[in-house]
Image 1 (cartoon, rainbow, N blue to C red):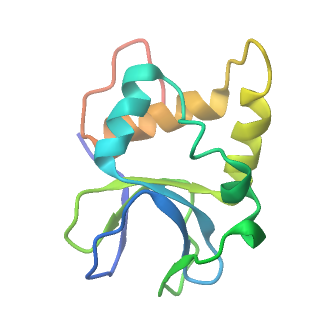
Image 2 (cartoon, one colour):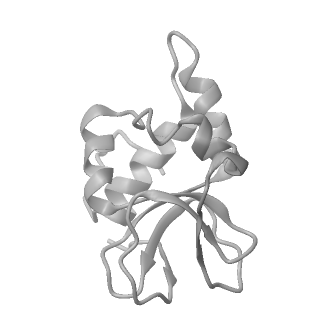
Image 3 (cartoon, rainbow, N blue to C red):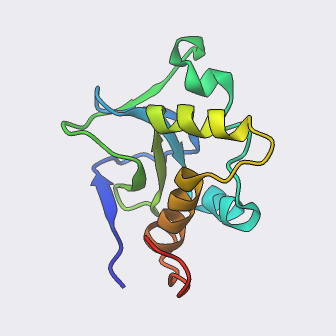
Length: 131
């Protein structure tokens, strides 16, 4: 099974937090071990979808990882650390709006779950799932 992981050169451990990868890629990085709870509960924790994470102006400090390209929502690996999930700011906004609905059925959340299973964790995709 081929995993699709964007590699970013970085020597430090990156925790689950709001980050900029280069100047063009704001978003939230979710460590691989935190991704497992997303798989288990099929939802993004509310702490990740907080107003502070959506409106970066409210954050006092934001980690900036040097990078020259644009990182898309998907699996990201920093240096030799395990892969995690990076969610771009515009996708965070969509997720936040969808979670406000009483009975949400998010295509974006389903896409993120497939990315976590296949690209972050390297698990096989069930026959009923599509990527």
